[in-house]
Image 1 (tube, rainbow, N blue to C red):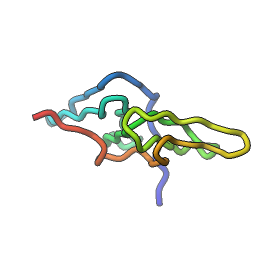
Image 2 (cartoon, one colour; image 1 turned 180 degrees about the horizontal axis):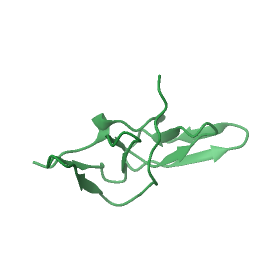
Image 3 (spheres, rainbow, N blue to C red; image 1 turned 60 degrees about the vertical axis):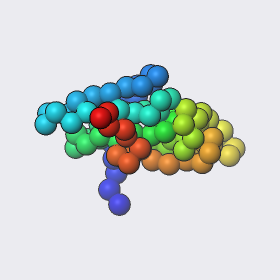
Image 4 (cartoon, rainbow, N blue to C red; image 1 turned 90 degrees about the horizontal axis):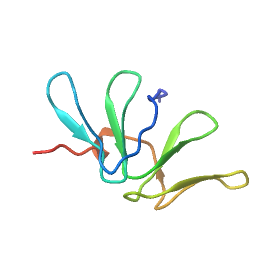
Length: 92
C-alpha cells in the first residue's frame, strides 16, 4: 500500500474545488477536502489529524472530532478512516 501525501488541511462548513476537467468535488459539511500528492481529491466525513508516520486519520462521523492521546494514540469520534474520494460530494 503506497503512502499518500496531502496538502495543508482546511476546515470549513463546506469546501468545494473544481478540477481541470470541470468536475466539482465538495467535502461533506464538517469534513475535509484535499488533494493528494498526485492531484487526486480525497475527503473525510470529519476532522483529521496526522499520526506519527504522517498518515491522516479522520473521524468517520460527519463533523466528528479527532484527538491525539499520548497513551492511547489517535482517537476518532465514530472510528478512524483515511481520506478517500468516496467521502467527497458532487453538486448536481
